[in-house]
Length: 464
View 1 (cartoon, rainbow, N blue to C red):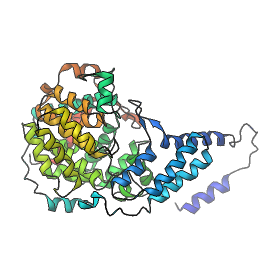
View 2 (view 1 turned 30 degrees about the vertical axis):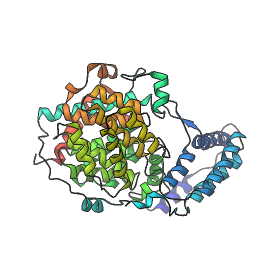
View 3 (view 1 turned 180 degrees about the vertical axis):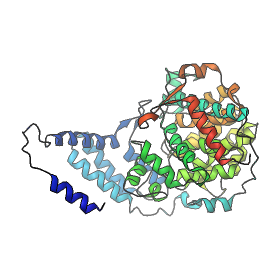
View 4 (view 1 turned 90 degrees about the vertical axis):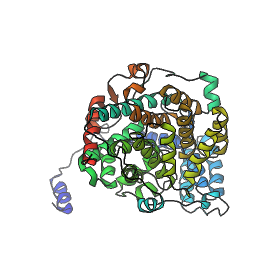
């Protein structure tokens, strides 16, 4: 049907009615105004749902652009005015200033003195692949009971790690220690709500439907179908997608959060579909990452995908870590971060190693990929394959704890199977994963999720 025909028929068939004052919808405008104002204020001041840590998305956006080598003087001047307008509840002015900040960030001048430009920024998988020496795959029997056990363990470990970290994210190591002391278990009754898993399930659904021919656009379509809302980079990506802007533009356009943790937090599932095959894990991570991120943000997802992929064929967790670090381009800034953390870890003292990383990356938002990648390296090194010790160390690093704990927990689950995880981590979680995905995916049985992963891995590993 032609669009004009549809419109014409609707108009031709519309019969006039007289609405009472109560039936008219003008009164809804006050609700729209309240919602719009609440959304605006949320970008200036909000609290993390799981931990109540304070955050400011506008400050984070400006901060991130400076991290990526731009001068943000004008944006920071407007930000100061915005804080004053927020305090005065002057929402008219705050609306204008917010728009001006976003406009300014589209035209920021390059800071030629920024160390960011000393490194290469990787924009596509082909360039990445040409730069590193990706090893030949080591076949893994994805139809075996052993693979099923490891897949199950990677999921339940990831869910456990996320549940541990959700209550802790957004705080520093010092503040967590003051509040909780040494964190060696859940600090409250855990639950399975976690945005990391949400995006991984959307990715898995696309891969199950399309197999090895899956594209970034296919995955993006599952975001649109299943995910009602996001935060920072993911929300901008969803807004772009809803306007018909598909990857890789969806992850870059008007997205100052493009090197934050949002892609890094969902790399594990890529490694699960490509066990023992780092190249395929990295390829899948790139396909997924560019939906919402770019550059070093995508390398963050590649790093975690590599860790999980390698963990299926490498029993030594420290060697697994070193192999993954070696597959991140040495001339990237992301590599400098994980290499710095690795060097600090080798000095042998956890507290000193993490203190050095905290100081080194203090100019980055706690949701940025860098401090969290450093935390993963530190925790994997000092945990040395012990699930309890790894969760302890990642919790005591602070930052975006749920994302970090979930990803490295998946590494240990894939590496060691269910025996790696004590029952005390699993018992409180039950067998049902609760999400904020649409429709029948709000409640997913764990075994169903594992079966789906194993089945999909079979599509990508037909010769194994």
